[in-house]
Image (tube, rainbow, N blue to C red; front, side, top):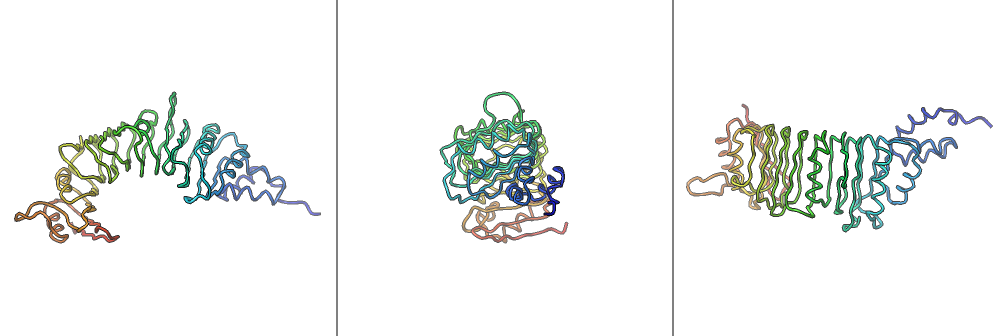
Length: 351
């Protein structure tokens, strides 16, 4: 019988080949090609477990992993999972990332069927650079009591979690000294009604957090991009200290006496306003020089309130557009999203 040439390949070369498969599951299947391959895949530093339909498969893959350190861990499951998944099964997967000193990207996408009453704890990961968590409606706890920092973390994206105010605050604290991008989408507060972030490094912040009758405080000297808060929020008070702010999306009715932008100039590269027409005017007065303006009306009739003209407040789209073009100096582009449709209108200036 002729000798198997695959078996003669060095482990280093096999690692290169298996890494190009972009999936730990696919790499594991290659063990049928050669006896030597059966355990080579387990020493790969990248663990990509995608569209896994059974928690047992994740447990088995992590148990078989022999790499002392990991550079990437991605565990994704279908949103419609065939079986109930408990957070007690998930937490060991995150502890695995800490034990193997994960020094790259962490991705975890859980199905909608994960138990909403459970808690998921994100352990200290000093070398992780990017975190992406989609965890349905479970509660996420960040950085349990103790020292240490996410020293290398630059990007964090969390979707669908329930979080306490203190856990959100920890992302903006000195425990994440290099964090530049923080995106919280569809996040609900479980305790507290105040969101406070103080970060010297943050440049991009998406804060779609439902704040019911609470307060928002942002002290972010390097922040350039902001989207906040969630549209259904009842925001009593907001203080945003962001002297470099250039791209703003404000998704609740703006009240000048309660919502303050401190140290920010009057010029924005882009301004996105979502709300009822009357609430748009004060924000347009606060930032009266805008390169691109995007208006998303919450009015089902498709009207904007842009100021009083001859005793009438409500105007159709065309007069409103003309009014804005006259009042906003320097406006180069105006985008109107039409209510209850996927349509939008764009008006561009030749200036």
